[in-house]
Amino acid sequence: MSACVPGIFCIMFSRLICGFVAVVVTLPGLLHPSAACAQDQWVYPLDVAVGAESVRYVADRKLPGLWRLKDGKTEVLFQGSRKFRTPLNAVRCVCTGPEGQLFAGDSATREVYAVSDSGELTPLTSGRIGIPISMAVAGDHLYVGDLELQRVWKVPVAGGDPEEFIVTAGPRGVAVDSEQNVWVLTPHAPQLRKFSPDGDSEVIVADAPFQFPHQVAVTADGTAYVSDGYAKAIWKVAPGQAPAKLVDGEPLDNPVGIALDGETLLVIDSRANALFEVTADGKISRDYPAEGN
Image (tube, rainbow, N blue to C red; front, side, top):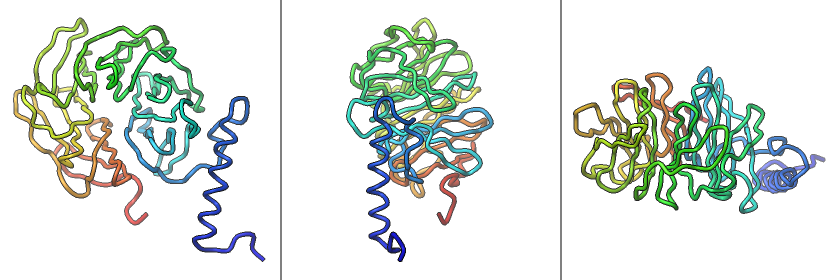
């Protein structure tokens, strides 16, 4: 007789056992978390970053942990414990540097981590960040938006004390452009500003057209894209022009994390539980999971 009868009981039993194994192997000194029996599908993805050869990294708030997506196949890079105040228990953002370095921000441990190719974590600030909500790399520093402490921090990529870059209410999105300017997105007017490396600011969007902005990405020509969860939209802010919706409505439900892969915009939607690709002219398609899955 089969050890597990097909059907819903089998599925529930398997998930129960899998969850138990995941908790056991993430205890200190035991196997690496990625060796656990992991789920094969994202649960509540919040952010996406692009690595070498268009490898995508996805932060999953409810796994909790990090996924790696390559050639249409996804795998757990780091699976955190569900025990509070353990690494990546509340991962909210990921980003990559020009050399392919991967970084993840976690509010459970108030920390930003460097993540190796094998999923090993290195804490960078000794827990001096509040709620890291968005990050971007410029040279040898990370710029980190902190929702709790209402700041954008400048953090050495090699680790060290965070340096206050700017104080601002609700710093939700952070991006760095080709000239190393730091773009900061907030829900309050002015909603989008650009800061030079020495802190001089320029207002890009003076009022508040975005309903609930999450993140910002900036192209080489200075065009900004903004994800807006309440509007179910991606906005385009071309240089010298007013914000305009590039795509809105279905299939988007709650677009959150965004990242550029060349000229293609990647969009993570937490409610659709999917990764979308958006072209510069507004054509949208689902990248993962594939249609029909």
